[in-house]
Image (cartoon, rainbow, N blue to C red; front, side, top):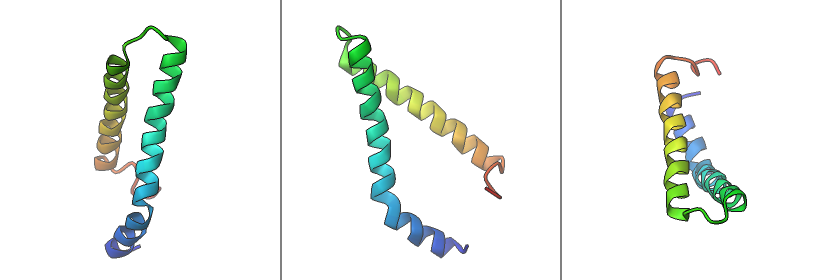
Length: 71
């Protein structure tokens, strides 16, 4: 698939990808609130974002290492 085709395909799904990421964040906020109702929501949000960011960095490293070239 050419680069232009990939760009066009992902542009169509951009909003869906962003929404799924937001839903993942919100679901984890709710679970944290259920499990620790007295917890600080700002702290929870920060920790969840750090977890998500760490995984994104790991995925970036995997992509750079070629792990997804023939996915």
